[in-house]
Length: 135
Image 1: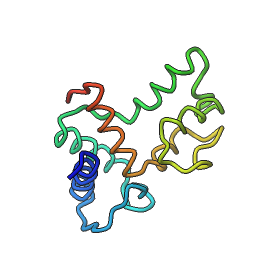
Image 2: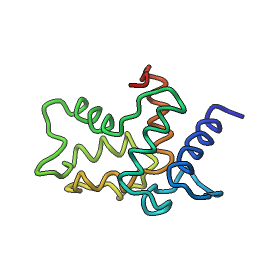
Image 3: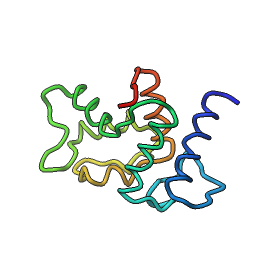
Image 4: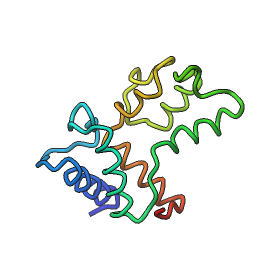
């Protein structure tokens, strides 16, 4: 089994445990909320399970922090919505999200609705690569 396959299998196990249902055909492109039925509390539980399983600290907010670092003094958000430049950088950071699903003036609260299984795989892989030890 390749590292990518093992990561996918581990993330899927955590999702199944979090949602407490049999999900035999999870795909990397599945949206956690719309396709798999997760809610905001499930996100917290999933993050905890991923941290325990992989021994890393996983924080989806790191995506926005990295975007802010790239933009420097330019804002990521204006009145709670992403700027056009922020969306460009977010799209690069989240290539698994189809073009157009992230858009300028999108409310920041809507970002999590776009998260895929692959997003969580990428967050774990990033934490593993960058020494993100569990908190």
